[in-house]
Length: 313
Image 1 (tube, helix red, strand yellow):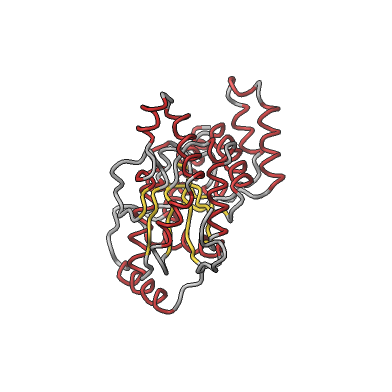
Image 2 (tube, helix red, strand yellow; image 1 turned 45 degrees about the horizontal axis):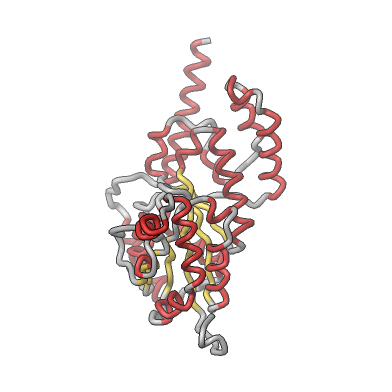
């Protein structure tokens, strides 16, 4: 595919950011770009979504220079889903273009902002083949899979998300870090049935099935949900890291998980910059509370609710 297949390419690290539409991929890329830049990493953001327009971050490589969803839909008379599948197949057929764009950025850390159509990561092979080619170009990548935290408030949706996440992990074939995004908004989605660690560590799902059984609609699908839960637990692969992109400690937690997954080891300069950033954050009045604070409030709220229910009895 490339005229330089015989040359040894430099080792480069990065993240491929995937997840359903609206899960916060673009916001994550912008926040992570700013965070890593302050740490001292030279970051290159690659827009791999041909439907993205007006990205809020500094985009160094933009796939829309090669193909756009609007052009494909207009010229080939395809819908948005079929058009996006065609776009990624077109990118796969023109990997020389992508390689030439990436080669011009040496000694950088890469963030690939990928499209959100779920089928691309569970059934269709174009994106998987693109990732595979990136690894052959000596990229060490971690798949960062974002899931909106509001799914935790609905047991049925959460089980569905677990199945989709597991399917994506098995299909993409990269080191994987799953993230519950928008943790600063989770309290707006309603009361959680369990503590936050139940969802992040994906603990015993039989407790979640009991909540589904209370719903008349899902009661008749109890056996199906039970088998789906068994599949997720038998593989024992799915867990989540909570993320509030506005919280430095939360970003550090995610970054450490990603670096551990792809083997990136930063030097003293980044460590000093990181310590300086955290020192500056001490005493600051953040707009959002940390993830730990959210979890503590849920524990307190549940305890208070139980106490009130006991008093009513």
